[in-house]
Amino acid sequence: MIDWRQLREIITTPDNVPIIGLILAIAFYVWYGLRQARANDRLIREVEADPGRHRKTQPYEEGWEREVQVWPYLLRIEFLAALIVTLLLLVWSLCINAPLEDPANPGQTMNPAKAPWYFVGLQELLVYFDPWFAGVALPVLILIGLMLFPYLDASPLGSGYYTLRQRRVALGAFGAGFAIWIGAILVGTFIRGPGWVWFWPGQTWDHTRAVYETTRDLPDLIGLHNGVAKALAGFVAIVLFYAGAGRLIHWLVTRSETDRRIYRATSALQYYTFQFFAITILAGVPAKIALRLLLRVKYVLVTPWFNI
Image 1 (cartoon, one colour):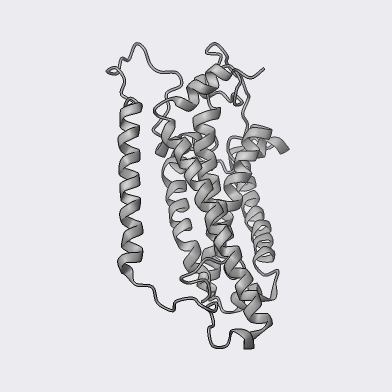
Image 2: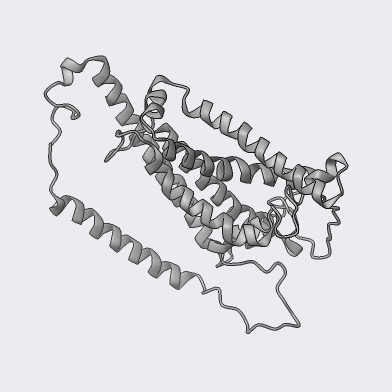
């Protein structure tokens, strides 16, 4: 049975209202961008099918202006956007109290104690990875990877206009990585309850509930308990995973003739940099999350110095 009262309280909490707005804004702009990209792709296909019809106006439609002035077109839109955002923030500040709480009391801590929305994704990643990796290494890799994905695509097309057909690899990689980050924020905000226990949306938060799980390392599944053997087994597992995931990603990014032309124009440094970040972020993070949730695997590689 869904506990609507609690679900409403979670959604309307001042800390969570920005996340609701974030999700709605992301959904709208993703839809709007995809809509424009599909329209541009249709125009590109028409030009390729009948170049003569568009010879004089390529890549413009008949009647389009070749140049649009910054004033008044762009600045008018930006001014209206600034007014709308200012009005929205004013109404928001009047209707919703600031999420300020009482002074910290070590004898009475919050449960669950959650980070602000922009850090709650990192807090969720701590469930699946070692603190040094979830709190430092992985966020750095995600940020650098998301920034590099568009630039590691050697395609000269898609600059200055929306398109899916001509930038499938860059858009797919960035979109998948961004979805993982947003998913971690949503899970940490709406799924994790007291004691950081997993509660489905609408499920009543039970502050007395305790989950007792026996976690294990990946080598333990095959009966390896010696320190050196566990380290070697974890290293082999990671190497095999990178090899298999790299082969799958290579197949995905070279399926069509257009993608193969882009691949041939990509330098080795660009391609292997893309593969490293794609395997680590897009394949490795979901795989480790699945191992933790389904098989209760805590670490894959166990060493005296660090764990992954």
